[in-house]
Image 1: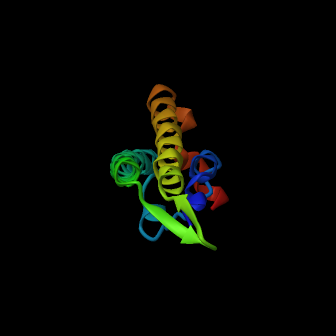
Image 2: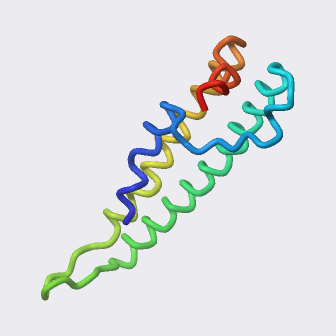
Length: 117
Protein backbone atom coordinates (compact mmCIF):
# COMPACT_ATOMS: atom_id res chain seq x y z
CA UNK A 1 0.00 0.00 0.00
CA UNK A 2 1.60 3.29 -1.12
CA UNK A 3 0.28 5.21 1.90
CA UNK A 4 3.25 3.91 3.94
CA UNK A 5 5.51 6.30 1.98
CA UNK A 6 3.87 9.45 3.37
CA UNK A 7 5.47 9.47 6.88
CA UNK A 8 9.03 8.81 5.63
CA UNK A 9 10.00 12.48 5.99
CA UNK A 10 8.82 12.53 9.60
CA UNK A 11 10.68 9.32 10.41
CA UNK A 12 13.85 10.76 8.85
CA UNK A 13 13.43 14.00 10.83
CA UNK A 14 13.30 11.98 14.05
CA UNK A 15 16.20 9.79 12.89
CA UNK A 16 13.93 6.80 13.31
CA UNK A 17 15.34 4.66 10.51
CA UNK A 18 17.43 1.61 11.32
CA UNK A 19 21.13 2.34 11.77
CA UNK A 20 23.64 -0.50 11.79
CA UNK A 21 26.89 0.42 13.50
CA UNK A 22 29.08 -2.64 13.08
CA UNK A 23 32.35 -0.96 12.14
CA UNK A 24 31.61 2.72 12.70
CA UNK A 25 31.84 2.37 16.48
CA UNK A 26 35.55 1.75 16.00
CA UNK A 27 36.03 5.05 14.15
CA UNK A 28 36.88 8.35 15.82
CA UNK A 29 33.91 10.68 16.34
CA UNK A 30 35.06 13.08 13.61
CA UNK A 31 35.24 10.27 11.06
CA UNK A 32 31.73 9.11 12.04
CA UNK A 33 30.42 12.58 11.20
CA UNK A 34 31.79 12.24 7.66
CA UNK A 35 30.59 8.64 7.31
CA UNK A 36 27.10 9.77 8.34
CA UNK A 37 27.19 12.68 5.91
CA UNK A 38 28.24 10.34 3.13
CA UNK A 39 25.40 7.98 4.01
CA UNK A 40 22.97 10.90 4.00
CA UNK A 41 24.23 12.07 0.62
CA UNK A 42 23.89 8.56 -0.81
CA UNK A 43 20.39 8.29 0.71
CA UNK A 44 19.40 11.65 -0.78
CA UNK A 45 20.45 10.59 -4.29
CA UNK A 46 18.82 7.17 -3.96
CA UNK A 47 15.55 8.45 -2.48
CA UNK A 48 15.33 11.29 -5.01
CA UNK A 49 15.85 8.83 -7.87
CA UNK A 50 13.15 6.47 -6.59
CA UNK A 51 10.85 9.48 -6.09
CA UNK A 52 11.48 10.64 -9.65
CA UNK A 53 10.79 7.13 -10.94
CA UNK A 54 7.59 6.99 -8.87
CA UNK A 55 6.48 10.30 -10.35
CA UNK A 56 7.01 8.91 -13.87
CA UNK A 57 4.88 5.88 -12.98
CA UNK A 58 2.10 8.10 -11.59
CA UNK A 59 2.10 10.18 -14.77
CA UNK A 60 1.98 7.03 -16.93
CA UNK A 61 -0.89 5.68 -14.84
CA UNK A 62 -2.79 8.95 -15.33
CA UNK A 63 -2.07 9.01 -19.07
CA UNK A 64 -3.24 5.40 -19.53
CA UNK A 65 -6.25 6.01 -17.30
CA UNK A 66 -5.44 2.92 -15.25
CA UNK A 67 -8.30 1.78 -13.07
CA UNK A 68 -9.01 -0.99 -10.62
CA UNK A 69 -12.53 -2.37 -10.48
CA UNK A 70 -13.96 -2.77 -7.00
CA UNK A 71 -17.58 -3.87 -6.65
CA UNK A 72 -18.47 -2.79 -10.19
CA UNK A 73 -16.85 0.63 -9.70
CA UNK A 74 -13.74 1.75 -11.57
CA UNK A 75 -11.33 3.61 -9.31
CA UNK A 76 -8.37 5.46 -10.84
CA UNK A 77 -4.94 4.13 -9.83
CA UNK A 78 -2.91 7.33 -10.28
CA UNK A 79 -3.87 8.97 -6.96
CA UNK A 80 -2.44 6.06 -4.98
CA UNK A 81 0.63 5.93 -7.22
CA UNK A 82 1.18 9.62 -6.51
CA UNK A 83 1.68 8.87 -2.79
CA UNK A 84 5.05 7.22 -3.46
CA UNK A 85 6.81 10.29 -4.94
CA UNK A 86 5.10 12.63 -2.46
CA UNK A 87 6.44 10.69 0.51
CA UNK A 88 9.90 10.39 -1.02
CA UNK A 89 10.04 14.11 -1.86
CA UNK A 90 9.29 14.82 1.80
CA UNK A 91 12.07 12.48 2.89
CA UNK A 92 14.47 14.02 0.35
CA UNK A 93 13.77 17.52 1.66
CA UNK A 94 14.40 16.43 5.25
CA UNK A 95 17.68 14.75 4.28
CA UNK A 96 18.72 17.87 2.37
CA UNK A 97 18.01 20.09 5.39
CA UNK A 98 19.93 17.70 7.65
CA UNK A 99 22.89 17.75 5.27
CA UNK A 100 22.93 21.54 5.05
CA UNK A 101 22.74 21.85 8.84
CA UNK A 102 25.46 19.25 9.24
CA UNK A 103 27.85 21.07 6.91
CA UNK A 104 26.96 24.47 8.35
CA UNK A 105 27.30 23.49 12.00
CA UNK A 106 29.67 20.65 12.88
CA UNK A 107 28.00 20.15 16.27
CA UNK A 108 24.68 19.31 14.56
CA UNK A 109 25.99 16.15 12.90
CA UNK A 110 24.43 12.72 13.26
CA UNK A 111 27.52 11.46 15.11
CA UNK A 112 26.17 13.08 18.28
CA UNK A 113 23.22 10.65 18.08
CA UNK A 114 25.33 7.47 18.07
CA UNK A 115 25.07 6.98 21.82
CA UNK A 116 21.26 7.02 21.58
CA UNK A 117 21.10 4.09 19.11
